[in-house]
Length: 210
Image (cartoon, rainbow, N blue to C red; front, side, top):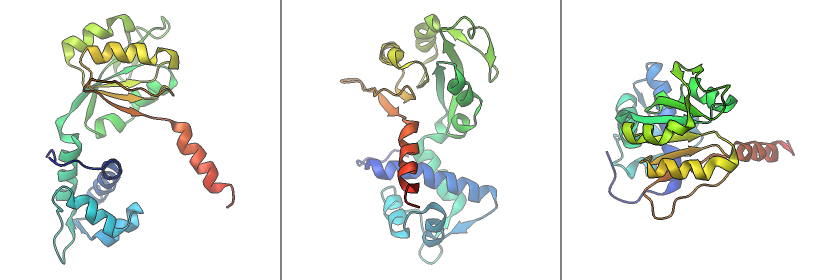
């Protein structure tokens, strides 16, 4: 369910939060919920929730609220969870291994199909049921397997050179944990630059006067 009009970044960033809470409500057997009750769970105003969802058709019913499973399924389609994208992780240190073993990727509609590293101590070992491949194989692997997403957890200095190789091999999305800003001018490539320290510093700011 691809929306034709341009959706703002703040709206798009709230959708996964809605989806996550709806998924939990569905697992707990909750069949319907009002925007008011949903707002209490998500810490977003009921008005904002309705405005966000109206960007995609609304999905609510007057006097009823939202059918949890239906709304969850619609958001899953909007976010691409149902499409099952393929992903690789480049850099299999502590963070790379943690992400490989975590449920975030599969629950977000992303199937991990390969791991790559340069260290001889890591190449050939097994992580999350996959044998770590040498980085020298990554270009051919991406070309042959039409990889959608690359998760980058390699050293900062290697981020751009490796990402450029991957983008030229057809990778369309980068989940970048390298603490360096990646962008691709003139290429149809999406990047999510993740700075874990940013959220920690925000937390420190919030608690400093509490």
